[in-house]
Amino acid sequence: MKQKRYNQEFKQTIVKLYRSGTSVSDLIREYGVSEVTIYKWIKTLSPIENGGGLTLAEIAEIQKENLRLQQEVEILKKAMTIFAKK
Image (cartoon, rainbow, N blue to C red; front, side, top):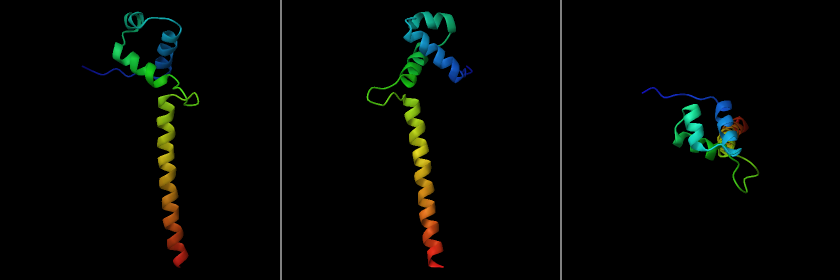
């Protein structure tokens, strides 16, 4: 069975409808999205407590960017030692 792809705007719309009081069963019937998928979107796109209002998806993106920046710093440190020897 072919896996459906949903864009970010659609996911956010489903989560907003859920937060406004629409039941998950109504969302399943109306949009044809599985229950597990809807609950995953709710978890991922909802702000976490004591997280400064960030969602899990935003935190994951920040962690990914942080790792990339750490790698760049390490590369620059190695380059500095190479050029300092010359």
